Image 1 (cartoon, helix red, strand yellow):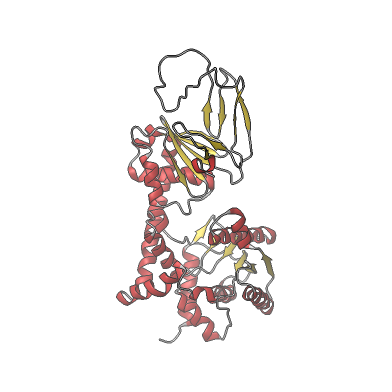
Image 2 (tube, one colour):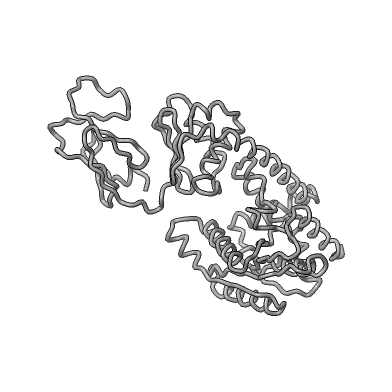
Length: 415
């Protein structure tokens, strides 16, 4: 089939108008990696600017993640030359993303994404841009949908890549297939770079791209468009649920601090299951700013904490969030990656709060055993006069009741 340049331009223009992505006079930061999608995006925006948005100003931005040695350097040089050849301003930055991910003990792709968008937002602020344009395509949308489906994502995750995020980031190519961006570049003789890591089948997204999507397209040639429509319908549904949640979430909120949030178990139980799961996700979002890597299995684990008899139980979530049940409260805490050490003395009758837990000491005579797993009786004659609660230190050991040999606290507690 012959490449239809006019049809592609019309498709991109329709997406821009449908979602109100551009206004004449906007400054737009265009994220360009050097690949065919982002290179096509830049050229398409220039064509549309000349025809419909004569006062739009484009600024090219490129982040060198330093992940592919010489190839990454060549990518940066290529994008710089591209911007210079088109007479466009250019900003680049280098970040050792692998070292950062290793230092923080986090997923490389997640860290790369955060660093990349932080860079783009900084550039936008520096140049006074109202929009950041990225080259996500309909093919990216389908890949994301399928990957999240296989992970067991709910409706929010399956709503996929949004056309506009935070009234700042826009995806003008979201109705365009990846093969269309390549055809555009090749038809016009526009050079682009090829990321060889996209050919490695060991990476999950690449297997979806090279194995699953072709089979789906063989069953239905319009499979990508069908997935895109499904994601769009889910986004509409999610917008409605977000509105409902905004009305009821405050009713369940007991308290909110900088890194901690408490919800009423009774109120959560009364919610419709569809709202309850979203309320649990909203609590995580308010603490972390996102719910990436939080799957339906994580949400189900939180819902089990709402069942009778689950006081004292806890669940560890991605993004360093720990959630525990304490009677009628469900507490969410965003744990700092490097918690500050502490030492707090316990004095009789003076409660203290440490790591989100209330602790108090009483001295007296009792014959009854503790009726709660949250009460510990100590022999006053065998403990020091002064007691304290402190943070764990490297090498700390503890002898559990009934054991002869000590265990490292590291084996009993979360790092």
